[in-house]
Length: 162
Image: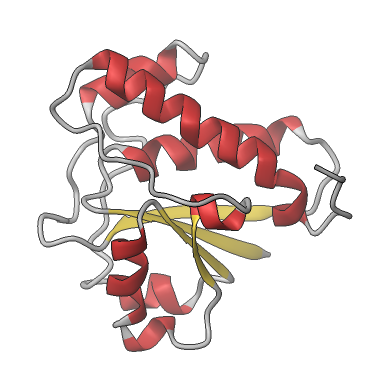
């Protein structure tokens, strides 16, 4: 089973939304090869066991994704390098997180991309923390758009022309 690891700073907002959205997109693609989706944080504020942001859970609910407080608990990847070592693909939200991840020995030889880079775009997916539901909603939509655009590539399907 292929494992995709989605990384952000603390693993309470962007990577949680991305994990939940990608799991849903994969579930909707009946018959495709199984992919395990994990998430984690690489920043200094990442801690094991933090609950997902309330705003992240609220904007996911608008998409029909009910995420309980304990459905995805945060993971500090510096404390769990085995998650990095077992990933077949690592997607970060920012170029800085990509660099921080590359500094971990367990990431050596692993394909690491920013989510936007993976879909052929430039730039980062900005952190919505503390900025209200509208910013979370825009972040969710950007993540969802990128994941939808990357789904065939993630599944190893032939690429459609852009």
